[in-house]
Amino acid sequence: MYTITLDEVNSTNLYAKENLNSMPDKTVIIAKRQSAGRGRLSRTWIDLGGENLFMSIILKPSSDFLPEYANLTQYLSVVLCRVLDEYGLTPCIKWPNDVQINGGKIAGILSETAMQGNLFKGIVLGIGVNVNAKKDDLKQIKDRAATALNIELDREYEDKKLFTEKLLNKFFENYDEFLKQGFKSIRDEYLKRTNFLGKAISVQLFNRTETGIGKSINDKGELILMNKDKELILTMGDIYYE
Ligand code: BTN
Image 1 (spheres, rainbow, N blue to C red):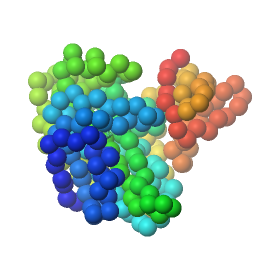
Image 2 (image 1 turned 90 degrees about the vertical axis):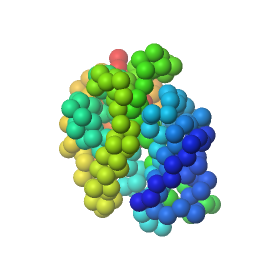
Image 3 (image 1 turned 60 degrees about the horizontal axis):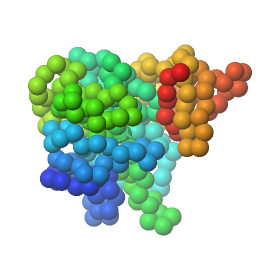
Image 4 (image 1 turned 180 degrees about the vertical axis):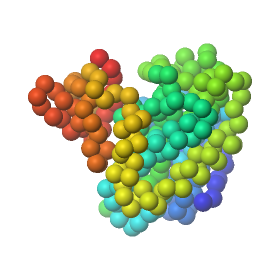
């Protein structure tokens, strides 16, 4: 693993994709500031200052895309929860990969697949973590309740470098096993860490919203939603509580 640190970039994911061919497997790109952070479902990721984490990991596990790679975001959400546990916090996962503490989103994860024509070139796994934010600045995030590590710990400042090291070490600790086994290897833990099972939820998909009771997550990391007596299997989307 080797790390590139940039002072400022539009998006670490975009930078990683643009430079992917010249960068080896497991290159980590960290930017101090990010002016046009990309989020899931065409959203943006707001930069709340240089003491927050904006990072992308370039992964080139094989020359073909394997289905397991689609669950890397969920793997990273579990890894992040393990790190936050070490800080004495109680994080939980909102499917597919939002990590929340006390109802506030602390991190966002976005994976992008790099292709050259039909050829699979690699994965860019991006994560933004609010490590140090001011309560007032969190108000800039309008779509969701948000939080930050320092706020949850009731501290002025948290060491971003230490946090990043912990996150990367934990990520690579079980990465090979995850690649072999896929979502199955984390499913039990993922289920324990979720907060929406058995609850009435609505799930916003690209072009429609589905409502029902969150029933489970299958072996592929998909959400099983019970809509009356119909079982819907959802691959992507965003959960809202009823
Ligand atoms: C989301 O919750 O919508 C995902 C947000 C992902 C943000 C991170 S910040 C580092 C990396 N670079 C980006 O442009 N996006 C991801």
